[in-house]
Length: 119
Image (cartoon, rainbow, N blue to C red; front, side, top):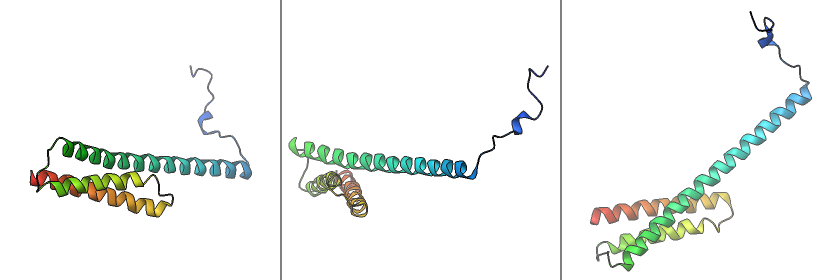
């Protein structure tokens, strides 16, 4: 009634040599490294796109005469955040690129918060 399965067949493993095991571990580590790299790149691009979107929205609001003299500096800060977000594509070194992206996020948050608080 067991359907042809032998008792204990689940515990049998294929015997591999140390070289094969080391090659498999190295392939696994390389795969995880590539996955982490692409995930970080995708996250960085999404954050940069968000700051650019904030800048485009702030620019549009300026063109339709939305800002008042009290809110205009916050719109300018939002536009500056988009410039920093756009500049992340031109910075090649990873550490300075992270700093530029962090500055873009801080400026975007400050700009949007200032716009909402002063309105």
